[in-house]
Length: 340
Image (cartoon, rainbow, N blue to C red; front, side, top):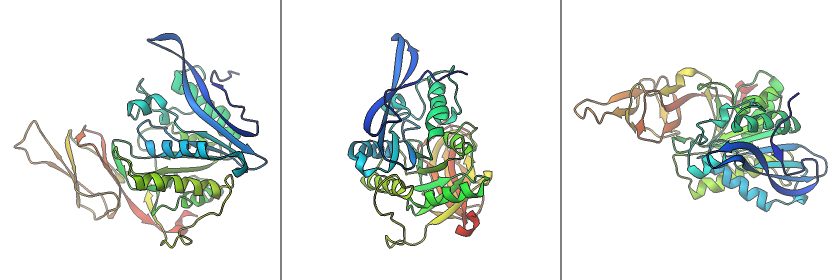
């Protein structure tokens, strides 16, 4: 059996607070013997759940990275029951470059289950698949729209087949206290990190928190508050769990994105003009955006319509758009009882 070539400088069985790194072997143009350093921390105290908190899966999604960095600096072992493992950025080189993908072009979130004999991103994915996810009870993966997309701030989840797992995931999703929750499907291939964690039967809690290349002060505050509440909800962090009711907020809206028709892609290349914003209600046939053509300034724009009545979940943030780029996602509304 092949063992992982990734070395972890943190003792994942020890108590207390440790901050170290994952060392992923690689070769580069500046060094035949080189390592990719991925930051990791472990904060452990007594018996309790083991929670794996991940951010920076895509490099240009900074909301979770900053919240995770603040948490690992501020939390001490006495505040923890069990173990909290924090990787504030899974894709550090992409984070520095401000890109979604690794410099190699790899999409880390499409790299699972990975391979111990593969490229560095596959080796890191394999380490999560064979070491970190199996030892964890809960996997939290924080995302946003990055530079490409403005996402309605929402916690979200896949509709997993196991009813008990689905119930626990829904409860974890609700603990973010977002105004909206989103049930989504995979439309761009396989290999997602959440899919691997779900396959292993874990409680998987994920979120999409704004985007568009800008993070507001309000979203930084919201991300940190929501993340801390999720950690309290799963029992690894001390403190009272907040609910929308306790905060004086109305019930959240659950959006159903299980239909492929709601994921709309650019029919042509050009300059995208959004006509709606995330959270707006739309009706079937309503223009959601237009694509303009610099090469043919006399040509009328191509209009992209909503496929059905629903709510806009995300909208493309970049104007320059290639044929096949996702330009928006629309979803219907689901009642809480339909999650059962």
